Length: 123
Image (cartoon, rainbow, N blue to C red; front, side, top):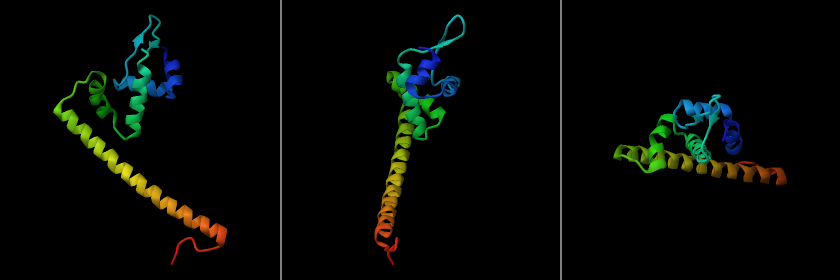
């Protein structure tokens, strides 16, 4: 598929796809006219890259773990790094849950204030 179709199917900009190629996260073949062509598996790969970026992994870490994802190649060092990243993500999730819980409390108190005139924050 061409770059525009990959962008459409993944919801990722053409510019981002070119960046992924520059970072060696994604590969394409070139037609005689120079157009990029991607295999069908590129959709799943781009989605994985997006998830890993969203989780805060830098492109270098993503590049290092792709061989493990693609063909199961791993080293003890890579597994250690992946465990560190997973633990970092777990801590972030905990922080987000705590923040959501506080926000829920604020919403509950503010709703009570709006409906009843009671103070938002109990004394």
